[in-house]
Amino acid sequence: MMEKISGAIESIGGFLKGVTGLLMTFLALGVVGQILLGEAIFGMDVIGNVVAVIETLGNSGFVGILAVIVLYGILSKD
Image (cartoon, rainbow, N blue to C red; front, side, top):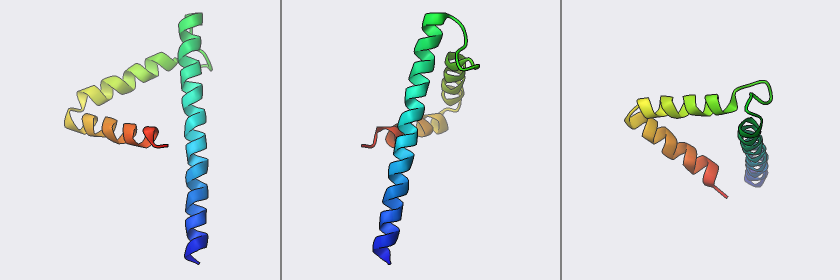
């Protein structure tokens, strides 16, 4: 029973890792595309959204630093 649960958790974790990788690829593609074309790509201002998130985290003080550390930990896992 525990082996099935463990296998399911590993399967879900692998799926989420794949989705995260795909989203990061689209984010990078959006940034590069917006830099090259000089206008919004995918119907949204990718660079503006990234800057807004960084500004929000920067204005949050300690909580912002903690959020950056948590996000880095999640995105840097192999």
